[in-house]
Length: 207
Picture 1 (cartoon, helix red, strand yellow):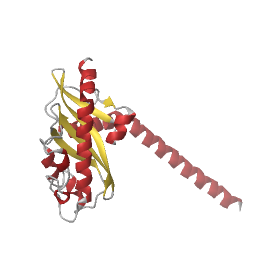
Picture 2 (cartoon, helix red, strand yellow):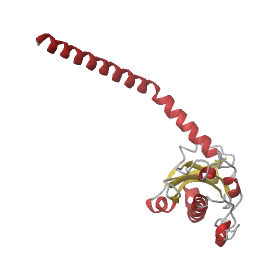
Picture 3 (spheres, helix red, strand yellow):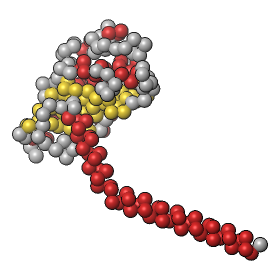
Picture 4 (cartoon, rainbow, N blue to C red):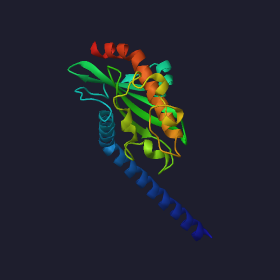
């Protein structure tokens, strides 16, 4: 009985030792690689932002604007990224979202030039059905390219909808919910940029 108990204790101590060593190794690995991981994440973020913006020469992440609660709520996103050339703001990338996607929230980046024209749209997170509603993602199709050059005046406000609803934007038959949600979200982004870009730009150009 005592031998069995001793064996049990030794086994438990051995498992504990392995657990402690494994935890220590994992912690050490995280500590040694955390800066590399952070730099990679930042580089990926900048690369994505660059896809929706014209040429820029500033540090987008360092210049990011944390939006006030009312603006963030209107967009469904928390930041605007000013793109600058020689100190002058030429465009903004804004985080926004479409809460009414077919399978839930669709998170987006929308690039908008100072003249109000869309520079690019990228889906950064979604749960849409693979092979059906996921064509909104630029990695899956060119659908989002149709927003380039559009503004609140082109097409006119009433045409900011998919063609099935009498609007100007294409969609895939049998999958209209997702594009309908994205079109509305892009329009909201344009409205917020038009309403607030003067203040955003003034704040950054004075720095």
